[in-house]
Amino acid sequence: METRKKILTSFLLLAVLSVSAQPIVENRKGNLRTQGNLAGGYLFSQKAAGAYLTGDFDLFLDEQVSFTGSGWYGFKVSDNATGLIRNHSIFSGFNYHPVKKGRWDPFIGLSPGLGIAELKYADSEGISQSTIGLAPLISGEIGCNYYVGSVFNLFVKARGVTGQARGDAPTPTRLDEIKITAGLGWNLRLWK
Amino acid sequence: MFYGHLLSFKQPDMRILIFLLALLQFSLAEAQNTFEKQGGNFSLGMRSTVSAFSHGEKNVGYGAGGQFRIQLTDRINTEWFLDVLSTNIENKAQRMDYHVGWSVMYYLIDPRAFTRKVTPYVVAGHCFDFTKISINGNNGDAQSRFSSAVQAGVGFHYNITPKLDLSPQVQYMLHLGKDLHAHVTDEGVELEEHARAGWEGHLLFNLSMNYKFAQLWKPGKKS
Image (cartoon, rainbow over all chains, first blue to last red; front, side, top):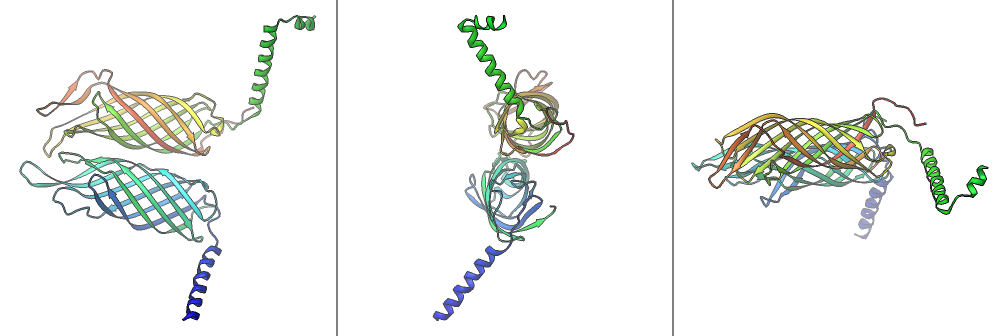
């Protein structure tokens, strides 16, 4: 049993050391960091959790600046007869990466977007109507990448969103939310 | 003769002379710090906008959009923008404003190739806009109009790097032509169109992040 523990510990240590020994992206300029993932969110006005299929990219224009874009496909928010049913969005902007080199890559950015919300409401006849509301969104994000090697990275990021959608509904629906995602991303060199 | 005249300076004259010499030395030191000329810079950026009030109504609108900038000289930049604003009018109607326009920015201090952390500026320009106000509800009344507007304000670049800036800006946008607004009463909402817009418009707060992608032409180095 003791021997097995030692072997397991040795393998674990070897795995950690080998990860650290892998070469990482030396020059970020020209590098595309991308990922596709499941993500969660919390809608403040609805007091409800959101679930998303999301994809995003960071295209490094220089060592400290990336052009970023992301898309969020929202799964059903709630089973309520009225209110916000689905909440999709796209964002685009720039991220600033204060640490130029190394495995750790914290970042912060401003990336406004457009929300596409599916809303249901009851009119005077009590019938639930469905409508699509488009909404300009104010948004920023903060996060950190960890470059495991030249191909993979681990990341965690949080995005704050504010805005309102209405469509044909009698009252607007707030889309204030924090979205969080984490996982494994890819690095792709596009130019040197 | 000259030295004799110099020696005959009174105390206040000497102070002026020393001040002028110090100014000359400062100017020479400034001249030695040469920076690349900035004419031709092409930037792209995304903007978030908050409209503090619209046409005298205390309703807050939220907007998003983008812009590009083409810098003409070290001190003069131009901004070409497109944005969309959504304003909830007292939970009874919704106003959508779409703007496409341009502004000229004048830097109040020499940006020194944006190596200074802060570059304040004044900005003024013109835009075309489309406004649509719709009363809430499935069969709510709606009216729209095209018009143009002028805008002016102040802002500053916070130069995170010489190529990347965060730019807070506040502008007053004055609509020209017809005024369209929702008149909210206890009985309901009425959409009204007036021949003259008057002095009412939006107070817009913009926050944008911009990156200088390229220099479209090379104006040469400062001598």
